[in-house]
Image (cartoon, rainbow, N blue to C red; front, side):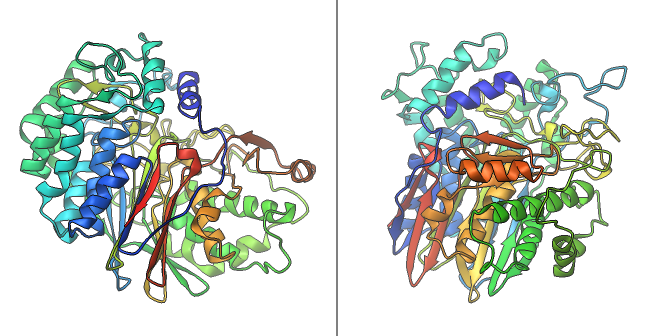
Length: 560
């Protein structure tokens, strides 16, 4: 991660550097949880109008594109898991794609070395956006209210404005201090007087409102053909990008069968590849099912060690095997989900010392932390878990001022250098090398868990490469330790991703004794302020219980 991005992330977390207790919200008729209270209220209002969970999710997602521009987007992509009230589930893949002109060495110099920042901070780093296609496809099949009605609230927010908060203001001041590095972000947060909107003032985005109005009126084609597509392609050409009108016209979201696993009496439904989240999470849950928790105390040193070793093994398999299924038809998904494999992996764990990860085998590419997640349930018990992203905070830092939205930098999620894997986390394995029209591998992990055949837990998180592990531990907290959703979200979490070979941990929540014991076992530890920003709902006995991670700042669970 670049120093400038790290500085921005630190700034954005200024008022939320640690996890504290967060209030659980209740409702009888529905619940929306997102990282923006304004967006959550938007989704709640759609539910009140008679919309279902898909309507609420679409309205919330478009609202986040206005109120949470660091990750909410129409210039990025993501994944949606839908489960109806009877437990039938499906998923929608609207991950970005590599443009037609992409090549597997496009970010390398004449010596075959990676050009610094080229795969994250350049127009070539922008993947073909998928968000509008995914939301439109999911709504077309499962939405209840008219498309125009669920998009309109976001248009109103963009056109009429909403109250500027401190998080957005701090981001604006950061960009203002970096005019050379972020020239296109210099007036993004400005008002009509060409000054940054102060906290408490009204921030309006009329250009974004116009773009959303076209999407409202023309649906999928409003973004991928016509006026918006022409302007987008012209922007790319002018700034050295390679996305064309043909790329946009060819883009389609894909409905895919979920990956499904079980944990005791629960059914886990999650995204299949090109999301690696579902396969990896279920693999780890299979490993945890082998444990006798009567002898493995929650958050004890042996517990943390075992969880870290499970993560290490699951992430190693992720890096070796997973990619875009349309380009890797022989991925061994059934093998990775097999409980027999979990038994073998658990049997290989030494409870007295850490395993060592070998970079000469395979590793794990880093991903940007600034994704966002929303969870929605309606009065009938239908559920949506949706995660989408621009990759880094504010994506590529490139914005088309005529269209009013920021572009992703998702091409950085591909393996940039074929065949080269390093101990720092760069990976060169074949399944995730750049190819035209290929979807880059992702860690996004929207999940719905069913109990007695009906939606029970809806959960997801941002966090880049840490997403899978934060969601995994939260699911385990609810299913195994019977925690309420707020406690499950706020409990201490760790992260191990095979390479780099270290445990990341929430430093205010792990005891000094546990740290020293883990170090004596051979673990390398790195303390951080927080892992993830989880947004979850539990539905039981006719009551919705929702919680937004306290570290999300502006996030909120809104029920009615």
